[in-house]
Amino acid sequence: MIEGEYAVMQSAERSNMLVKSYLNQAELLLKDYVSADLFVVYTSIFFGVFACKTVYDLSQLISPVYFKSYPILTKALQIEWSNRAMSTFHAIYIATVSLYLVLWSDLFSDDPRRGPITLRSSTISISALGVSVGYFLSDLSMIIWRYPSLGGMEYVFHHLISLMSVAYAMLTGEAQIYTYMVLISEATTPSINLRWYLDAAGMKRSKVYTINGVAIFLAWLVARILLFIYLFWHSYLHYDQVKQMHEIGVVMMFVIPSVLSVMNLIWFSKIFKGMVKTLKRE
Image 1: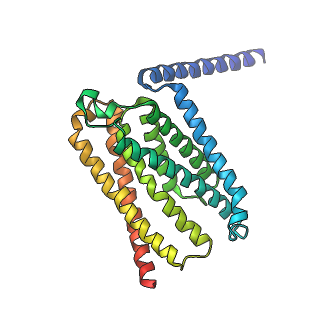
Image 2: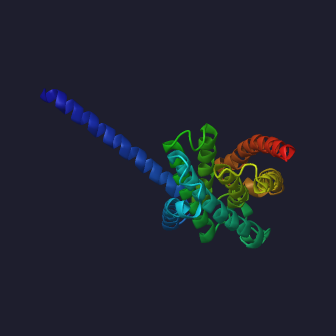
Image 3: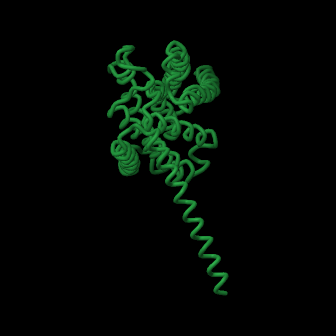
């Protein structure tokens, strides 16, 4: 009996030593590749999670007062209602920051004196990505918790690769310009959510629903089709700077936008068919 307990204790000790060894290796790997200030990273992620939870709770508090259709929804639809409020908040926030950083700030200006455009970052760009990581963590948790009512496997896959790419850009400072170009596509989310809200409110045959459908089509075409074409063209023109990233970053830089492009094209075809169907009904 004593020998058996001793063997179990030895096995547990070996397991603990193995876990500590892996943790030490992971810590060394982080020190080698993480260039961001970890205080900024942790604070921004926490703020992203906190902001999403606040918006979700406020939606549940305010919606019954201002929207007559909310109280008659099922519990599952009320959860999705608040979840979409959370995603709308994130979309407006990150699309605004992305447009500013890509189009108006000088962080990613085409100035060779400032070094490779693929290796530039700032406290603002890192913290904004951290907030986005907080959102993707929050939303992915809800999707898994309520699976599949808030989205099927394609949503889980989309959030996982988005989370992976955003977290990599945040921690290493690499390819942030292309990460923000992709995040501009979140500008389509508010109109997608508005479509769901109108449907839930019984306004599927209203003029507003039709106009919003056309707006979705145009926004998707610009932000998720044409913009991605420009992203690949831009990376081709700056390939000498792209090559200066770590090999992992280079692979992610081309693979993840390519996968997202395929998903965007599939969804775009469904949006187009839906828009045509709605316009024919008018």
